[in-house]
Length: 211
Image 1 (cartoon, rainbow, N blue to C red):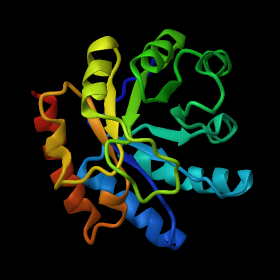
Image 2: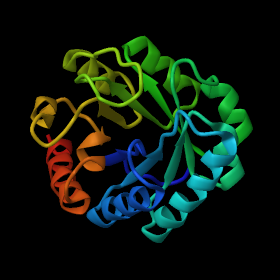
Image 3: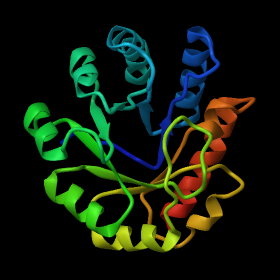
């Protein structure tokens, strides 16, 4: 398995941005210290997704940050990403592992301890757990309590990241839970200064990991 660090996991949202501005914001986040980057595109054609992913990959390789593709194993394989993230309705993790091999990073979305245990057993490398807060992204969200998040952290040996509506003003709710890091979307994508915001969020994430 490849080395990766989920401390500050940045998930993109290109909604409302030109491609040039989208890529600029991604590079600013990488400069600011985002440790893992997921390209999430729900509405692009396969060809559009691959084209954009290749451009994003050029940036992530420059900063030595693994690129994770959301949902689409075909896109991840086609453009040579380091990983893929799978939700509960996507391809089963065990099937994905057979296709992708041991060196590919596979993340999984889980909301309960049984889901987390199953994902780990089937070969997931890390878990995204949430949503902790309601989000503004175009994904269906079911809220997950911090109690459940804590129980999942204790139940599995792989990194567990909180996700869902997190930003600098509310991540304190994650204190003492034992997360490996947290995921952000809008907190960076919509920031006036993505690099500065990423630096602040990375500092907060490192502090939470120590607890």
